[in-house]
Length: 95
Picture 1 (cartoon, rainbow, N blue to C red):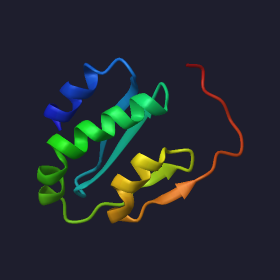
Picture 2 (cartoon, helix red, strand yellow; picture 1 turned 45 degrees about the horizontal axis):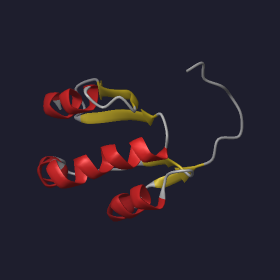
Picture 3 (cartoon, rainbow, N blue to C red; picture 1 turned 60 degrees about the horizontal axis):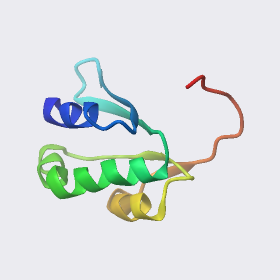
């Protein structure tokens, strides 16, 4: 985690990259948000090339909830975990 957070902190286009542990359950939530599609692709490409193997060796299972506006590249990388794609219907953010 610290290696991934360190890398993300150096990516200007990564706006949100937060890890949360759910009590002592071994369940984690990782929130990610990028300034645009290009920066999202760059982050995911770096993960796929440098960390994905080690990451998936360490986890028992992985579920993803992904915005349906994810790029085709991101969707292809995440295909193996069969993520749930969600569509925003309302709300706002201030950044």
